[in-house]
Image 1 (cartoon, rainbow, N blue to C red):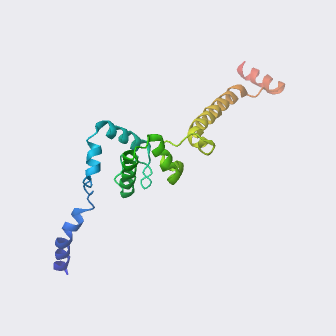
Image 2 (cartoon, rainbow, N blue to C red; image 1 turned 90 degrees about the horizontal axis):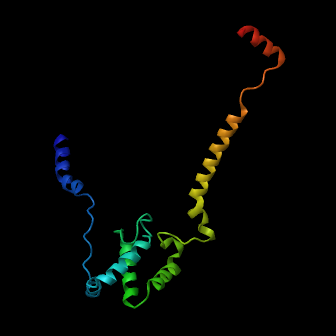
Image 3 (cartoon, rainbow, N blue to C red; image 1 turned 180 degrees about the vertical axis):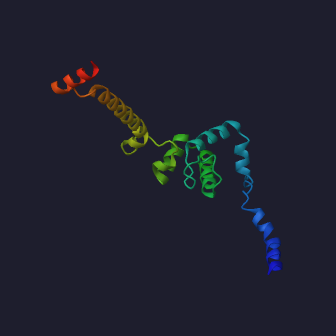
Length: 158
């Protein structure tokens, strides 16, 4: 039994040690290579990809994500740029397909007001509560003594 365990450990060690490596980036196609050779266009696309959210990762921009869907969306953005569309047209195209969620910083609208201003509102409420609590505690003071207790305190101190 001990020999079988050692044999399994030796056979499975390369599989366990290898883990799940990150695949290398796919080679650029000829059209992508031509786009990459234009530094102005590449900077424009990078800026646009930093504004868009990876739909799989959700906490990464399209430029930072290694997900397959992110690669597809980057390819789509490049194809739109190659077709001569402006950044605004590309954003609108992606917005029509994926909604506000595609934007890493969603627009300020009625349905996103809490997202944008909720943290500030919460901070204001906390500060107001602390101020109210402090003023209430400071204003209360000790309860006044009635006449008989006042006389008793004077005799004890006195």
